[in-house]
Length: 353
Picture 1 (cartoon, one colour):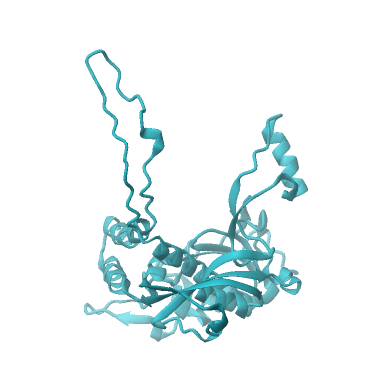
Picture 2 (spheres, rainbow, N blue to C red):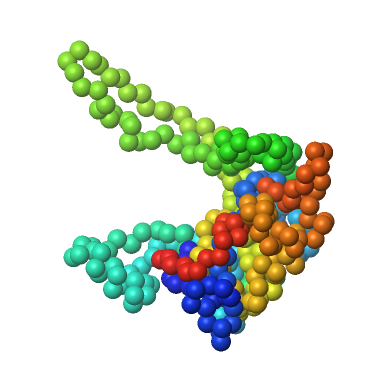
């Protein structure tokens, strides 16, 4: 999602800096192994039960580490007074068909050029809007977040309660430690993949591919190909775990944006772009690196050059002394910590669409 097409920095010592305007910085932040963080949380283990709608628990009182969690199907309304503050990064993204009349004038003009006389096909997309969310299925922690940030709960259709525990956390932690300790890029990628592969298996589609049934693959007078059609499908993948991992990942991203970035900078922070685990942000502040030092517990600066001024100014408690006498950062490769993808290099411009 790209709320902005163009953004420019303005800071001392950059070419073309306007000293009469406020300092503005471009940050490209990535959450370390976001799915690893989500997989480490309390996830579903079974014990499913539909709750009586007349005896629902107070959604705000359920702990993230409660033995029983829940998924809610609800109607949420986006109050108009939230629109200005939430327009960059609306809560509760959903899959919906984007219609031609919902496109902006700019998009329509661009579309006319690209269609070149062809027909516009309405397709389903994952979109973030400020519209009312009806029959929206959501993890209880995300629902708590929505209410905390001002959305209005209009109706509850049904609630599914379940047992939960951090049953995958030891596995994720072990892989994270191995990734931290390895010295080569191959193993770093391997241990990260070992974490992400767990998520992949929870969402694996076990339905047979109909395109392969009866398909002519081999040709020749002396060759006979026999195609077998799968007659039984066993839905043995825990897709409910997948749903929780995706929801908790969104929870983490929104929490950082609204409860840290927007709380710290207000309207001086503008979102330029976001994907699953990263944010490109334009921030108006005197020195964004000084600000990051103030909140060093949130960040992983291990990719910064050793001579970067930020590292020199970090407080001693951000470092750990290794057995060989050298030191390294506490947050190196820690899941959920935010990494500067520019590694301390100062970006001048952003362009996206």
